[in-house]
Length: 117
Image 1 (cartoon, rainbow, N blue to C red):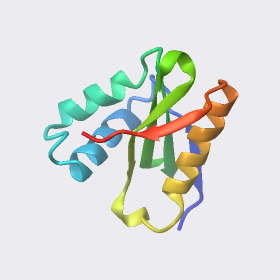
Image 2: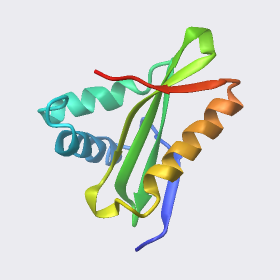
Image 3: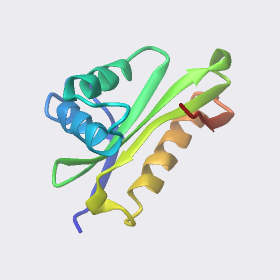
Image 4: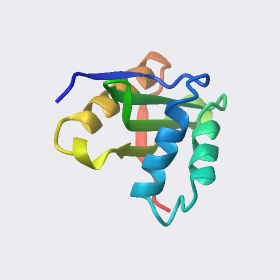
């Protein structure tokens, strides 16, 4: 397997955004049925109350994680987390969660939680 890089998602990364949208569509078929819905979700992650990280290998998107800051900046909801099926079991999700937690800590956020839809 290629080395994995985890970086904040750049809103100017025109290649990564549709690749993330395709991952969302492939893995969450009831939530994102069309690529356009996935692209809208990625763009929503650039709002002031959100942040996200992308995992890449060989410059290809293999995972994505986002956070929605809540409760006046004291908490964040992990939303969403997706890893390409070929990378399951290789620690990509764990690395994405660690990056999200580290950024939350840097911002003074004390709680991470998962919601259900």
